[in-house]
Length: 160
Image (cartoon, rainbow, N blue to C red; front, top):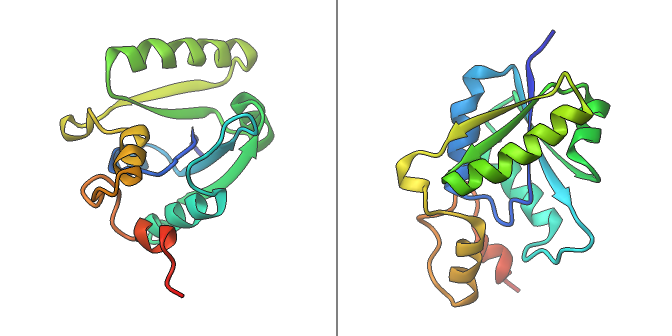
């Protein structure tokens, strides 16, 4: 049986922290499915199409990475895809407490499901999508915080 991990998130936008977790997890799994969650009650900063496109561009060299979108409970998606591992990155102890609660609830709903935590590397501990969005809102340069392989500014300000 293949070891398939689901890495769920909004990726609004994807950051170098996300990229680092995914690349460091590749040796642990046969396949990683990056699942962009769609929540109609939340207003995303970037379109779903852009987020999906950017993630595909970042990981285009990796056959074992797939990018999908989904609505609803992550645990239901795991059942649907026969996934037994959820991959999560931890930056702080607050992240751990939050992710632990979700992981335990998911385990209760699907006993075969395991949540695998990877610690963020020190250089990305302070990095999150909220901060990147704030920098963008105020016209700052986010190139140090997002993966190489796509141009966020090109999609924000398309050429005529």
